[in-house]
Image: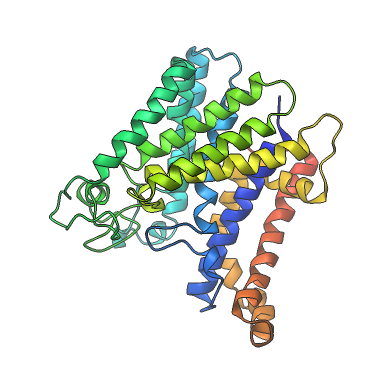
Length: 360
């Protein structure tokens, strides 16, 4: 069983990752004044850029019940899970340290990253799906999100003042500073890694929320759009209320961030599920285009990471420089980004047309 809506939404999130990463490249590499919604918030809050990665993690969880229908942990299944996890961790480490490989002497390497977190969450959720039942997993989700709140509010380990509303001033960040030393994404005395150590705990909860959604979709005969919408709205409301005390912070993967972003992802899936998964309904042009990204998501992300500098090449910047005064930076800066995304999509569409799926 394969849901078109899930593949399309996965494609949209991968396209979103490429979009927001390229927007940051335009801002810092081409000094363009890009639309703020395409940039990550400095600390607490939420923009479009902050939705794509947690959305992808939720879908990692949703896909697990579909890919492991027998729900049996044997030696072959164990090898498969551990092998895929190892490949994701290795590929993620390589992509996170492309510049370090050109100069080992700098010592500026990073342990964690996007694919590393995906690998860890996939591994944890796959084993939990096979080892414990749905009720136990719901208890685990609740416990992880609840415990993470007071954990984040503990005094910092290195003497930095504790204030959850101030960037880097929290226990979670201090654990990264203590254990990861200088190998952090955010440098300095208030540094941390946004895919760091303790933040993996609520990220596992986010993956398990996806697992629960996947199980519901398998059990439900016919469309489940209404149920998905109700669940998504409930998570959005609870997460929004919780954010008044425990702010929505992507960089430490706060519990309110998990609920709000999971809620938005499930609401988006409900909309797509209603329109795309009905029997006899053919996907439109837009949905078909996103299937190219969705069926080869990791391959598209990897190609983007390797070619990220292309978006600021002089050739691609020509339309931006020619039209920035007429259209303004926020609109003109999208032109090289869209051209770059079209190039990556072309490769993925070629793979899709051949029926080739690159599995990690």
